Length: 241
Image (cartoon, rainbow, N blue to C red; front, side):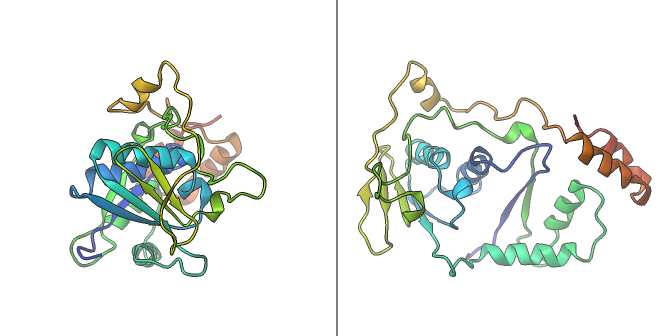
């Protein structure tokens, strides 16, 4: 907020999907490579469960807290009160895009880099499939649900999570509460778990670009008559069924 620096992670659907591992890859990369070293960090998240409230992301953040020796607080904004500073970045980009001709995903990345007129400009990371990591082998917690019985709190009741350097995950059901240790058993260790937990790099999530459906590829080909010829080779090279 003070520096007004923003980092945008951009990819097209041939490079990644919208799953927990993809979001965890972006967020952990941001913490480790775009932020200065600090003893604690607070993340504000919206209510999206597959993006912000799931065990894959929580295990990834807990792993970062341990390896980077920091405490990470993840706080969930209340419904109806989810506007935050990052929304101004999106609005600035949308205004800039509305005035430009766009023929490929790379055009979006170029526009985003110059959307902000003042310095610092937005940092844009234009990603391919090799960037994304698979955190599903992390065996730290099996769930982030605060309870296990009928009637117990569920994931959508979480209001905050606290990831500690000692590998303990704590939670709140109200922002006014004190943090409590998550009442979930840790995953039972397997022979390969220590290797995954101690790895400096996690395995790639995707082995290759993701193919488009044949119908979508055909639809994109049908657009070529209204797209400058210089871009045709990009559309011809898209992986597809």
